[in-house]
Image (cartoon, rainbow, N blue to C red; front, side):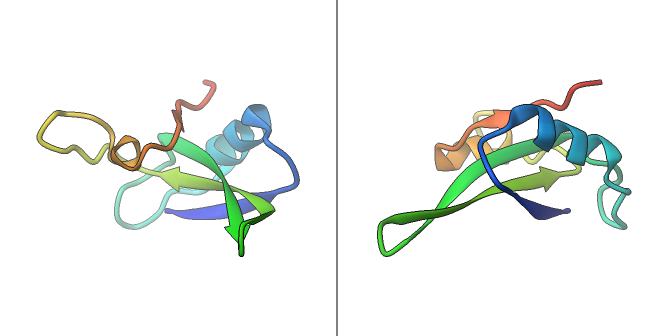
Length: 77
């Protein structure tokens, strides 16, 4: 589905980007998003909103992103 860079940890901004993002050819419209901060040589560099268009599940039925210990946030509808 893709990603976008933002300048700070902002759930509302990431939700807005998710809600206004066009559907992709594989999974449709954005359903979930994840905000994470990149580190380069241990130095925080940017915030990234990652977008998910469908629920990926593991054997314990959790959204895919949660298996990596990140925060998955539902979009505001």
